Image (spheres, rainbow, N blue to C red):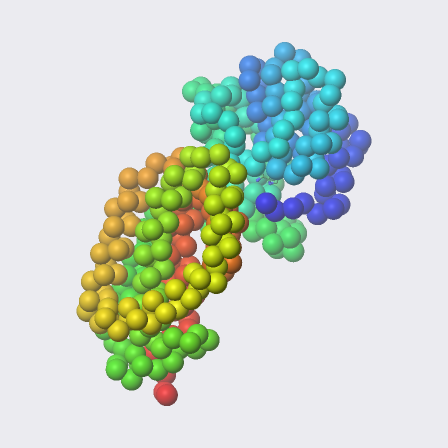
Length: 332
Ligand SMILES: C[S@@+](CC[C@H](N)C(=O)[O-])C[C@H]1O[C@@H](n2cnc3c(N)ncnc32)[C@H](O)[C@@H]1O
């Protein structure tokens, strides 16, 4: 989870922000009726939740935030409001049943969420038909982008959608065909740059990334439906096997590249890409947003938690990374 700067975090918890929040509620909710079961995501220290509870004393309000320190501050602040509760929850993985809320509120928080589109998908999932997702946020501006750059929080990172995944798979398929077809025997046997593999072995390894994706997809689909601690524990178990994984990875690619190369490698690559594209077409948006914890030591592109869409995208991140290390066409 991206962390707020210390300055932002303390401002969020401050008394002046509490006063401002009270005045902001009518503007922030834009005249939408705030009734029934209400969820606030990224509610921080509960300043807006408290203001809402005062303005709409009959709503059942669940305020959530990913940061436990914020949640503790909110629990203190909201203690006098019996219909309001504050609990920890990541907006990209809400621990609520489908269609549980009449209104979802999001104030000044989505720009903190790298996977903001997952937060929106999750909000849509837990919203009842006819409900409203209401709030406000920052627009991209040079100042905002600069601050997020220093916090390593890209404001406008391109969302990973089925369309972008499909396109990138088409791109690598054409690229892979050209690489394998044009590589001379000298190219194939030349050492790649920054790895202990030859170009031939590295080409196989670039394909292998997509085989890993195929193996991961059913696992991520399953884990995404189980309680979060299950995948956390599972990732720890996998993490313990990191050394073995790297050894198998290294030697199996060396061996397999001897057998699967040239036109056969292209055929296997095409078949795998086609299977991935066909599966992608059948994935529901909610399924693509679900995910699991990953063993981060296995690969630099694995992150602590990855959605199914990110697993699809991972194959191409892996491909592009190793593409730079090929020394095909370079003088020996
Ligand atoms: C600028 S504060 C806004 C707090 C509150 N909405 C308000 O207006 O006072 C942003 C909040 O978003 C929370 N946040 C960031 N990423 C989150 C995520 N993925 N899920 C839930 N909360 C998140 C942060 O912990 C922080 O408390």
